[in-house]
Length: 167
Image (spheres, one colour):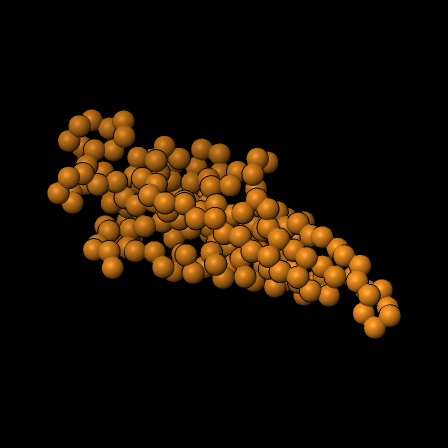
């Protein structure tokens, strides 16, 4: 499942990559799961981080832009579908700080004696996805959450199974 932080809440999101939007790279809340940010931090521990980067180029601007967005969405979907039970991804880019944006460079090229434009697209900064797993104590049992009294187990969120053996 894919999540993103919105202020003091962490909401489940779906990708919304649209070449015709002002912000081409977007995540839309689907509201299937939502947590207060401190509860999310108490339930999950970060174990890895992935940078989703992509570049593309071509002679038609809209085709090159659509291609890069398709590739980015495919990478995010592949990461999300490859999660083990209990694992979640969190989009760690912050709006106004390091939010990913498409950047393009236009070059003039000569093709058969005619001037043409050539478009190169990249995403900068990359989309940062944090991989989170439920917090566990020794022996595979749930341990105390951060800030909770010792011995108070962390509840497993509904619909998310505890992690199983890794391949």
